[in-house]
Image (tube, rainbow, N blue to C red; front, side, top):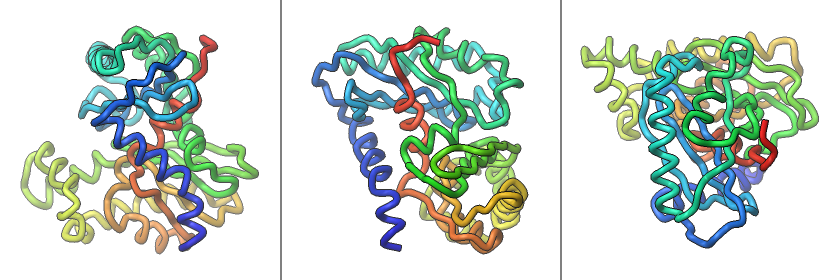
Length: 280
């Protein structure tokens, strides 16, 4: 596993730095701030980097304004992003002007610019809109393999060859489906099931219940990588925080499967790393 730790060295350090600045922002003045806005099915995350692309602040909030990668509550999405933006501006004592955003792979034509308009509606100047796995690779720095972003609503797969994305795809099935299964099995509300899933101490107990959904995710991954010479799978996205998910996916796909220490913040940081001062 030594080479895996080396693979994730930059990623894990960047995420650790980001986790620190969520609670204690770095207040040194920067000539410019770059913000990554990640509109997830479960969480909206804002990651702020300084002129040297180092994390200085961050915030996230549970939200249900996106479903299966599509914005379903446009006004609610703008309101939350605007509130998080203002909260971070107050902490930093500076205006956040530039932001990048991301979409699940394969939804660019379906989205019709909704996510870009949400970020603009919150008061940002949008400098980039890219797909989520490509954003994640700015942090992972994978040359060859498949990056799989398992979010709240969808599983997105990007296949990389020589550091370039050669294929992307996205299908509904993610954390929401996990919560629905828990809700049915435990006879609890969806909200309670969602909370129960987030508690690490419940993960071992939940594994047998969630195995069929994880196997479905594995079959989605297998289908998308079938025609490519993929040798390794790298997991990101909030749903991958589930302990042991990588072992089931590895067994089902017959491929080594790895994840960083905290898969939840990889994509928002990657989005921020792709932010510039050039307006779209």
